[in-house]
Image (cartoon, rainbow, N blue to C red):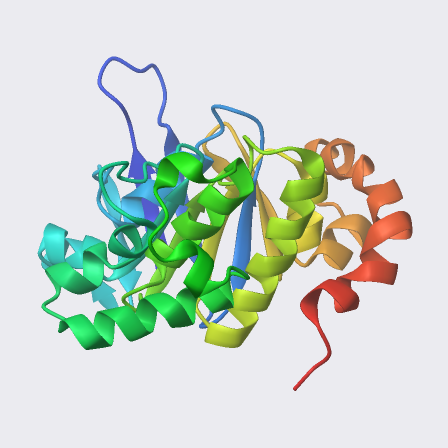
Amino acid sequence: MSFEGASVRYSGASRNAIENITLECEGGELVVLLGPSGCGKSTLLRTVNRLVPLDAGRVLLDGTDVTQLDAVELRRQIGYVIQAIGLFTHMTVAQNIAVVPRLLGWDGATSAARVDELLQLVGLDPTAYRDRSPNRLSGGEAQRIGVARAIAAKPRALLMDEPFGAVDSLVRTSLQRELIRIVRELRTTTLFVTHDVEEAFRLADRIVVMRLGRIEQTGTPEELLAKPATTYVRELVHAADEVYERYYLASRERLRGSPP
């Protein structure tokens, strides 16, 4: 997944929402877009699945310009998870997870097997949850189902826009741990949006710090802490100093699991 000079200006706006963004996400990498509300991180993410059209530049997925792909087919190939999960309440958990496989023409047995596999992957017992209504799920359980649905058809990329913002801190930490494990296991290139510095440092292989529609700095958590490129980045990651000492060094490998 890569961006080449990507720019977007919304109608009536006085400046671009994103301006000349160039960024490459490696296969299997978890890249976090970090910055305050209005900095352009969600706009950038939504250019990948063409929910937001570009005014200049291009977005490539596996080397192909996304505008050369049918929009519906493109979105079926990209997992998308947002804070408002949007599970279909008239469907069971299994039916929700199998929405995209069904649209892609998977047979019933293959879809059912994939549902059970994914429920296990996100830490839920298939027997207990397969036929459950979304109305009977906790916030954390619903977000796990949302992640399972997003990766059900083995997407080429995963887009996540503040997905854990509506759950409490204990559940959020558990979901972050599960996400790291899933991305590592599936090797799915993931773009994750957050304004939370601690969440960014917990999750990211690389962090892209954004401000006013532009990239201020891109680097690993260690690089941002050691060599902030601008005063803005220094002030932003200052809050992460304590995270680094208290959490990052001691816990990152534990959260990610031991190397295979």
